[in-house]
Image (cartoon, rainbow, N blue to C red; front, side, top):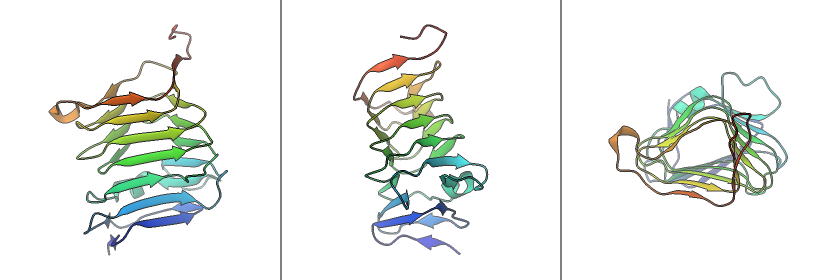
Length: 178
């Protein structure tokens, strides 16, 4: 079977698994969030056997092109949101933990019309590349670079787009990034 999102939808749970394709025929938005604000979020995990709100790689792959936007995290979230392994989104994605931290450990890729927005009020720590196919990247907080990473909006031969960082850019490694 297939899951059709026909109206703007918010799903709150302890874990999220989509074993079938999730699509929208009318450009609806989808929000995936933990039941409580303080719960940590892990995106792109290989299995769901951990205490965090988790979305596995298969579930991310099942999010089909056609949603107006995808938001992961709560508008009042205070836990740490971590991209554990590389993930690909096909629609505009917002990862948010407005009162917590965000950590990007796996490459974050946006294809098709997927812009990438990261929202935090503490730090956004980037340990892996962030890539889009000609769509903007918005980082709405200070950025901490732990190693050399690439923020690239020219993937798939696209002309590139805006990269906005609201906050300081800080290095945090023995390689002397500052």
